[in-house]
Length: 367
Image (cartoon, rainbow, N blue to C red; front, side, top):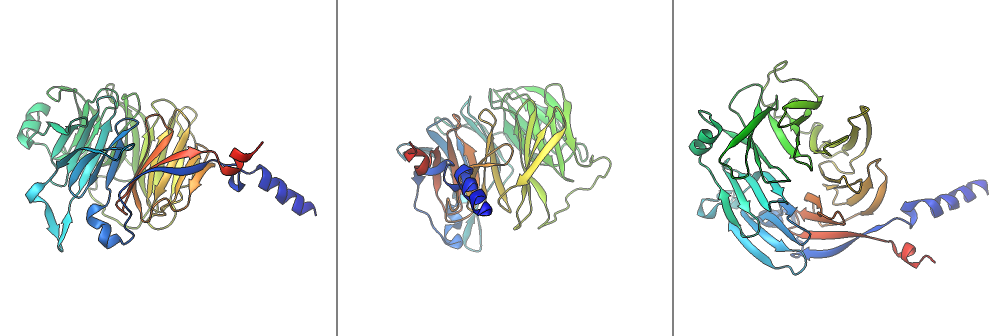
C-alpha cells in the first residue's frame, strides 16, 4: 500500500507522466523518405534560421532560402553546377563549414573544394568569394589553406582559421566588408569546430587532441581550456573512428559553456560548465552522434541526432518536452529560432521541420 501511494504521487507530480510540455510539428518541407540510400542526395545537411520566418538550408549541392510559413523558396544558389563530384553514380557534395549571422542576414560556408563563400541570405547574392591568392593578400600571408570559418552574430565580421603555420594555429578576423584585417587570435590546435558567443566577443573551439577552448578574440585572451596543448604533443591527424570525441560547443559569452561528447553509436553526453566557479553538470546526450543547440536566454537546450528523438531540456538535464521519432532518419542539424520558441530540424529523410513547444493535452484540460 505504501509503495502504491508513492508511485501515484510520483505519477501526479512528475512532468514525464502527463504534465510536461509537448513538441508539436508546425511546419514540414518535403515528404520524408525512409530509405537512407534513396534519400542520400536530397538529405538536409545544414539548416539555419535567418529570422523567425525564413531559413537557409543545404541539400543536393544547392543552398536555398525557405519560408517556414508558406513553404515558398525565395532563391536557390547552385554550389557546384557541372563540376559537382560523383562517386559510385551518386552526387557527392558537401559543405565543410557553415555559419549564419542573423543580424547581417549572411551565410558563410566552406565547400568541399575549400572555397569560401559569404552569401546575402535575403537575395542569394555571393558577397565574398576570394581566390586563394586574393585571400592571402588580404591576410598578409604567402599562402592560405582555409580550415574553418564563422561569422560574428552581431555584425557579420568573418573569422577564418587557416593552416599558415603547422603548430599553434591562429584565426584572422576580417571586418564586415571582408577587405580589412582587424586582428588575429590563437587556437593552438587544428580546429574541427568554431562557434561564436551571442555578443560576438568570444570564440569557442573544438580541436585536435580533444581540445576545448574559449577565447576573447580581440584581446586574444583565453578564458577556458581543456585538453593537450598542441606544442606539448605536436601530432597532426589521429583519424581515429568509433571513439568518444567532442562534437558541439556553445558559449554564452559570460558564465556558461555547453558542449557535447559523441560516443559513436553508443549514447554520448552533454556537459554544462560554469566558468565562474569551475563546476560542471554532465548528463545523457540521448544520441550517439549528437546535434545540439542552446537557448541561453530561456536557459534551455535541444538535442537530436542518430536516435531521431527531439528533446528540449533545461540546463540541469531535466526534460521539458520530447518527441521520440521526430523524423524517419538521422537528424543532421537543429536550431532554436531567434525568438527561442520554435525548433528547426534538418534530416537525412530529406525533410525540414519546425517544432513548437506547446502545453500537453492534460495540462490544457486541467481546471
